[in-house]
Length: 149
Image (cartoon, rainbow, N blue to C red):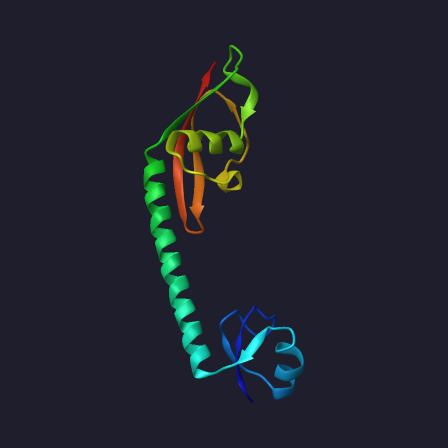
């Protein structure tokens, strides 16, 4: 059975870059015509190892950058002004998008609104803590002060 390197993720076989054994017919009739795999050669194996190492370096660098941003955002207090009634209830609400825009304005960091975790939109004045996910395993807690306009 020949060894092949997968060029893309293949269901029930493996992930991109994996070296697997497959039958000759499966390789010749399915994997190669669809450009899902190539026969494993020394040069191709070395290239795949370089790409994997490069991807790991890139992931480590981005995790380090996300950790630095989390530390910076942990010391950030955002102030958002909204119209409110006399009892402190907002006429509208402060949403994920409002917080993302406030972070962009305050620190110059672009955060996707879907990575800001609010159980419910903020509907009262006061100080609230909001969790912001910067990377899959890196989060920061940002204090949001909602004041009356």
